[in-house]
Image (tube, rainbow, N blue to C red; front, top):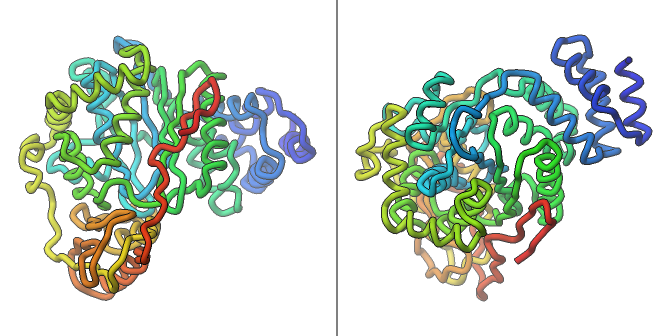
Length: 442
């Protein structure tokens, strides 16, 4: 078997066997197959695509390239949740304790962010004392005891994906749906969950800009789940404006705590309840989504979900007092107001520009392993459709200093808001749901 023959077959539109795909991935990880041949393979996939079966085999090959968690010793159906990313996306902080409060074991491996703001691990590390590095035994024990653990992703989890993604990033092959789907699902499968709920974002602040592309990606990931024996569902949600109002690590933790008190932004709470409902159904704790929503709303209003978050923070060494006093979280010393230049309605919010503004303040990373400032970020005062007067606040920057970077962040944040004379048509937050039965819109 030769790499060049496999590349040629895919270039010409042929379907690869499981053995051929495993040969490529194993050889690339060992260093036997050079970057230039794997680049050619990635480009062939971008142009020719892959069948659902090929994509599933690629996913399994990458998942098997490193260590795999065995969660079988933890009772119950373990359900993981993954978001394709967005601006102000703090859903894991709310969804995980909600699902755990409903009796669904959540054993989640998460990563650090690269881009607008930190990832889930960065957000959690804004809680004083919180430990994200857990030994496997401690991780398993914690899920067994309180039903929830979130730990930093091991460097040996799907290392083939890490290596291939770095190559795709510099060879213009990032956009391939089969390569994106297998990248996401390889890490989820290696993490050992029995079922997976995916939050696929679409819109200006998301990687997938159109609903059609988001649904194609969701269908590909759900198909992988079906073919490898993992129950999978995907929720397509809107990212034409930031989710909730907070953008930034400690700011998002504070907003997540408010949501768990049933006092958070309506869009954030609604999406988290929907995602947790799908987790609850896949976890066997409710027969359908409506039943799951009723159960979760009770857990939210009774304070059980908040109690679960408090226990989770304490179990991982964090200061549980932040749950009752969020002002104990890191706080930036400077506030810079973004004001409306004219009266009217907020017709557009460029989520990507607000994310870039937050990154310029220090909330995110431009390069891997760069330090971040947990305290800084952006808090929206208005959402799409809001009526504002001239000079009224649109957003507030939380900054560590007042310098040239902050001035540029202020300019970007101001440009993110478009004010007009008529209210906009605001599309629904949840656009469609993809399961093994197909796509359900509305």
